[in-house]
Amino acid sequence: DAKTTQPPSMDCAEGRAANLPCNHSTISGNEYVYWYRQIHSQGPQYIIHGLKNNETNEMASLIITEDRKSSTLILPHATLRDTAVYYCIVSLGLRFGAGTRLTVKP
Amino acid sequence: EAGVVQSPRYKIIEKKQPVAFWCNPISGHNTLYWYLQNLGQGPELLIRYENEEAVDDSQLPKDRFSAERLKGVDSTLKIQPAELGDSAVYLCASSLQANRDEQFFGPGTRLTVL
Image (cartoon, rainbow over all chains, first blue to last red):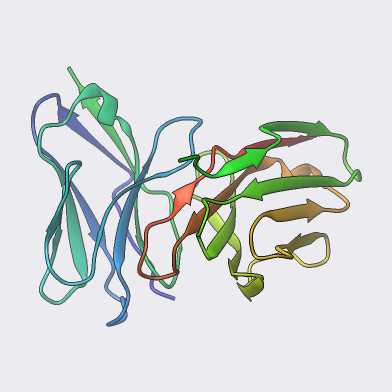
């Protein structure tokens, strides 16, 4: 099963873009990359997903490298409420890992 | 539209006692997932259902854990007997289809085994 690797923590200034990287070098051709976030004491919340093209929605943008071995989640204007643990997973493996704890600072 | 419903939200039991968790997925979602989440870690998949069929239960400790989704709608996860190490949050999620669609998570059940 494909596994993902993320930095354990990151900080970001309020109002700036937060760029969260994820490595998924063993991803299979038909697996999607998903991003979720989890705020303390709540269930994970879906953010965005993609297969090979870059994607954007009202919450974030997802940039997937051409070889699909890594991706970056971009929160364009981070707010204090974006402080959470962010998980990158691939669809068939469903291995969440420990995620990246993003702290947005005023 | 209601999200994924789980009950109870909290459960405290003594070790060796049985416990059951219930999940009602979003209407129309064929795929249902049960996860276990320990403090400071990401969710770990226990079992995935496609309708009433368990298609991935490789991570379910079958000596004490069991699950069912009899009519392909709601699901129950049971532990019998519970051990101290089972203290965790048990999350249920659902999606239209596996692999292609996002999962919607319930609030979880926090289990404490004394």
